[in-house]
Amino acid sequence: MRRIGLAVVLAVSLALAPVAAEAQATKVYRIGFMAQQSAADLARYVNAFRQGLREHGYVEGQSLLIEWRFAEGRYDRLQSFAAELVGMKVDVVVTLSTEAALAAKKATASIPIVFTQVSDPVASGLVASLARPGGNLSGFSLIAVELTGKRLELFKEAVPSLKSAIILCHRGSPVNALALNEAEIAAQRLGLEARLVEVRDADELEQAFTMTARERFRGVVLVPSSLLVTHGLRIAELATKRRLPLLGWTDLQAQKGALMSYGPSASDVLRRAGGHVAKILNGAKPGDLPVEQPTKFELIINLKTAKALDLTIPQSILLRADQVIE
Image 1 (spheres, helix red, strand yellow):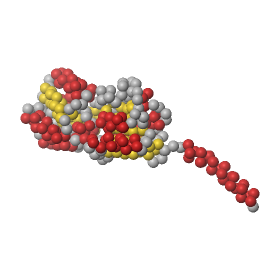
Image 2: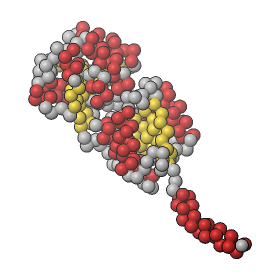
Image 3: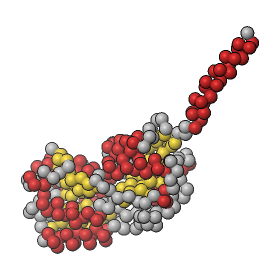
């Protein structure tokens, strides 16, 4: 009986050995995700990020865990989020804005950081260059600022009566000078008057729109910044109240009431960011991964806002829209 019992134990042990070895070899990674907006606003982006991870074999709840941190518009929370994630010793930190990326960079020089929705990673001090980031950061450049001229062209096509517009931006942003230069070149070509207006914080938005209406500027173009995304609903309400067509660069702004938006598809960038994370988990160093640029762009028209402004959007531009909000 003893011999039989011993034989059974050995047989079971041998059968379970490969399973135990496989379980031991399968590591569950932990990802930190930081954004300044709310989880509700970013639902599409979050799903796109999960999809990108799945495409490379990483599934939340199986091969990895994701620590989600949403600041709900409170920038002061980003630094504490970064410190918290670093303290948890996550394997990678993913950020969704320039401010979030800077907070993560300040918190760690060793944990890999994948940034997204950053207008100018070099000017912001995140990386040494786009081709050779160096350090522990890499990710995706927004390049929405370089599209300012193209966006003005689309704005003029959508609102043929447009004669002047302000270029609204967050004071101190390193991309403002480039945005103004792009706007001035396009405005001159289109016969538009353009002026740069800077705001330091959300409290100055009301004043900016009051000045715009008082000086008879007839449209508002938003320059990429986290501040203007976070307060997208309020900005859209201020514009509609003063009957000013509003042009944004991200789908979130059009969904919250801007007349239109044109820019990189954030959902596509977040899906590709999942692939960036997978490369790092597979052994790549972030400093060796070139900063990538968007490849998919979206034109979105909000017909509900057009109706509120008594505007008729030409059929030619409606046919080119990737999405029409009715």
